[in-house]
Length: 224
Image (cartoon, rainbow, N blue to C red; front, top):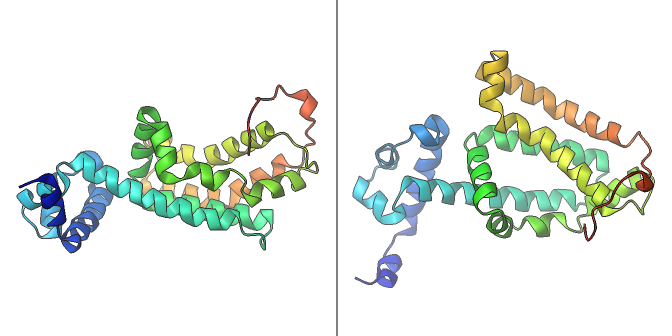
């Protein structure tokens, strides 16, 4: 049987059932603790059928994480380009949705870190990240709130890095943070709930200090 014929005979319903089962098991047990047999049992299929559709746990995990990220970042595109909301409203909505998303996808940071190291260009292209960020309406609002429409793009890049770092790092460092501060899962979740309120306040404080572009060495050829 040729590969082309083999693919055409796959049942989309079965494929989706396996992916949904994998989401549940990965969420419950984590990537390392999940066996393909666990996923097959959750989906109600035999192991041979699961391997026929997805070949390996790693490929199934990557596919699920990629689809999840694509949906999320496309939803973010509408949020940051909404011309009817203020910058403060955008920051609050963005922070809340981003943190809630990462809380609901505990295995996602592992996937992101691996992809950033192994294939950053491929990750950006598959997620459409450049299209989401470059020229976004929120960047115009950043400039206006900074009181200078001529703020160089490299300064805005610093702002974006700060915002993302404040939300993403706690999830990347979660195992270490829990170990150092003896945090339970419930305490970590409580910390992140508080962070939904704190991050927008910290971001707004960035705008309170005047920025003189002449004080910084600017990265050339940055276009946002």
